[in-house]
Length: 64
Length: 152
Image (cartoon, rainbow over all chains, first blue to last red; front, side, top):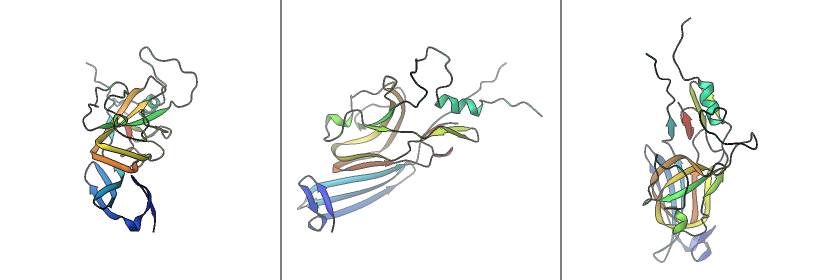
């Protein structure tokens, strides 16, 4: 058993329906977890790792 | 021996440390790193390469709870170079805890809060919502291939 923070306050996870998922593509790996209470979403957390980062190109222009 | 045209790798690293100034710069009170922040923006916002500074327009704070406008403070690793690339990455995951962000967001803006909130980089991702939960952005490995900010 674990305590989950929800829109209804802290709740025992045994009282909730848990849904999990993962998205893995070229841009990110994302794991999410949801807890539902009688058809209502009461908690959703997301853990994301970005893969495609930004890079600047420094260029020394040719002369002549 | 032969000469090879190049942008010096040391220069790239020094750019990340504020060693060079080709124009009108800023007066720095110390040699320590600036303070940087990471702010989340709604999918409906327009944050991109033309963004020059952080503003609250389109930030998730307009519709969320427990999210502080301006986002979280982040600390970067000391800039390094490897091969011909200079790079730096926040030294820890960025976590927005116990927030409710029911309007879809898909962007984090990294900006310099020490220098008039000037924009640094924009990172987009698949739209997300958070309900009484935590949104964590785990940082990539801080190297020349995957570092969050790189000058190649």
